[in-house]
Structures are given as structure tokens and as C-alpha cells.
Image (cartoon, rainbow, N blue to C red; front, side, top):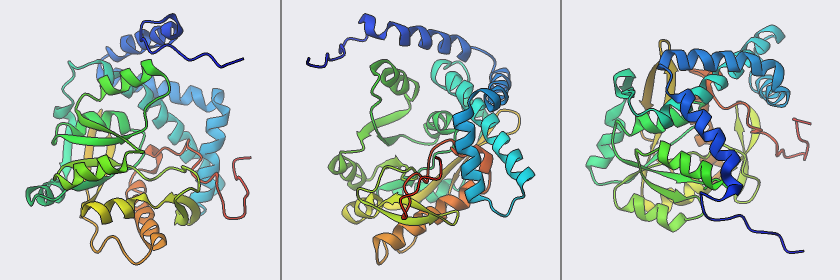
Length: 302
């Protein structure tokens, strides 16, 4: 029997359960910002007990990446990661669904000249993104700095894809991650494009490069993109600060990039990302199976 295709209409009954969830999400987003974050911390503490699979992924990542911590310190960091991830969920609701909140008043920017300098010279900037769990509020905050585009994988759920794009309305253009030519065109036109290569996308066009001392499948597309476009790579990190405030940090452009090999470039990219993650390790997306592909074929999450 042929597989039935899902309706392409957002009003189709197929999507009604998702719309119900979106309505609850919207209601949560109307809470005052600091109360929203407090609720998220509560969700995060609860998820330590209820979201066992994600907690175990975080614990495994912490054990692999922070061997210098003793067992008690590793557990403390793992708990902090779950709490921070809970904050990200409610933070996303506010960022996507409450435009009354002026997040620009809560933002501080470091290194803006590292972004504006190359753009002022007519060069494209590949903003080296990182999967901090502030990624969704970060897109709204980045829009306070300047217009930018995003390399993006469309969500399989049409309603969630609509919500994400509506919530990230500051984004100028969405570029499908399979559209390498479109990405290169944007960069050659002297635009800023956010691009995050720090997840395990499998071994196609990837090499094993160290990340926190652990072999990590790292895509080599960053090298190809920069070679084809002549873009400048600017590290771009975003952090949650106490009191519901935020910081965006633009690092110095990577010099002499690309280098001599894909492996050398991937190693340098991972080391750069690691540098920024270590500033707030609890805010990184450690609930992702970053090391699921390993040179010996073993999966550390099993």
C-alpha cells in the first residue's frame, strides 16, 4: 500500500494536535521574561528525573569532555545543563511569541567590530555559529545587530516550521543547508550568514577531528564554502547572563583560513567552538549525541 502524503495545508486536521501545542506555547510566552526563565528552570530540574534519555546523553558528554572533573562535579554540571535546557524551552516561547518584550534592552555586544569590519569592506561573513541552548533567543538578538541570513534544515512538521520562521522573523533569508550555491551567492554579495557545523551529521563529507579531546565527526563544508566564496569566518557566540540578560560575542576573524587540509580546518573550527563553550559549558547543547559516530564504530551512548 502506498504511503499517504501529509497535507500541505496548515489548516488540515493532521496538524490540529500540533496547533494545540502551539497555542499552549504561545500562552506560556506571554509570561514576564524573568518569570518565564524561572519556570524553565523548574522544568529543567524536573526533566533531570523525567527525561532520562536526554539526561544520560548529557552525562555521557560531560564524562567524555570534562575528565578533569571528579564524579560529583560532573553530576553537578550535568544537572546545570538540564536546568539550562529547561530555560531554553520557555525562553523560546517568549522569543517566538511575545514581540512586546524588547530584548534589545537586555543585550550587550562584545566584538561588534569583528563583524562590521569585513562587511564594511564588502566581504561576506560566515558567522561561525554554535549550538548553545540560547540559539532561538539568539536569532532574535542577532537581528538587533544587523540583518543576517541562516543556513537551515526545514522542519518535517509544517506547523513547527511555520512557527520557527515566524518566531525568527529577524532572519533576512533562510538558506536550505543543501543549497551550497545559494549560500555562496549570499556570501559573495557581501552578506552575513549564520552557519553552525558543530553537530554530528554523519560521515558523508566529514572527518574525525577532536572536540574536547574526543574524536567528533565534523563536516568539511566550512572549508568548501570559504574557498568558493572568499568569506571571512567570524566566531559568533551567545550567552544567557544572570537577571534575564544576554551577551553576543563576535570573535576575531579566523586568519589564514582555510588551511592545508580538511582535517586541519575541522580541528581548528572545533577548537574555536570549544573555546567559547568553555566560557559557559552548561549552556551548550550537550543533550545532542555529538559523538555517536566514532572511528572504532562504537557508540558511547549505548
